[in-house]
Image (cartoon, rainbow, N blue to C red; front, top):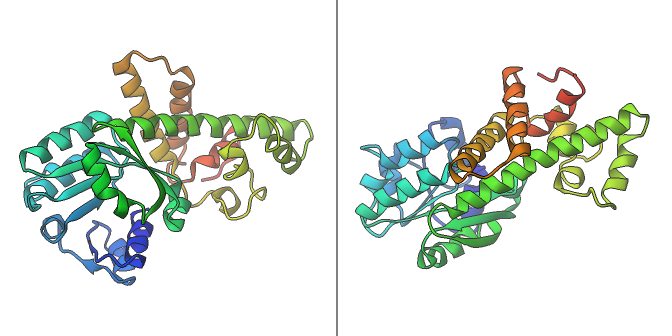
Length: 287
């Protein structure tokens, strides 16, 4: 996703210095016009605004708070925007460290997936000071169609993990309904058409259908390759579970969804798109 986001910034005329531990990812973006950096410190020194897109809590902490990380390398007044999906408490910890070095940090996770990143149609959920939101918004809007100020630091992450929990639940629900219909003899294309003009309609049924061949171009029609990986969905559901435990909020369906996706990981499906829950429910092996 970071690669597509970078390309959209380049298309808008921004100069970019990019770094990734995956050299191939760097090469793809530099081929589009970005300048490669040897390390994080070089990115921080050369930038007025830094965006990060990382997989896990620990990657964000290392990237920002390590001795040679962004916070200790950036110029005073630099804006730091983390678009990873992480625990709200981690975002708050990073923001506190950034303030000590007179840096401006906001958490800015996104919704829309790889397709949204490619088409610059992401929704950014921003947590932080309103002034920092306003300052970064023009740049953010080069990569997305909407930017919403959710409140203080960490509230962007709260919005994101709640959204992703609901997404995981809905994908399982759509998969169960379509499997049931198919087992009872109904064509999944016909059932999908009915659902999408009825009360069951949702993003998982209409835009990202999990049945191969129902919607062209989505991962289910490409052997569940690409898209939003099972491992990342399981990670996000774990964040929701941890946050719910701290808040004392019951999330029965969220917890069950977490266990389903963790089981899928154990069966070798971590790298497949999360819509692979449909053949998983059917008892099919899609490794």
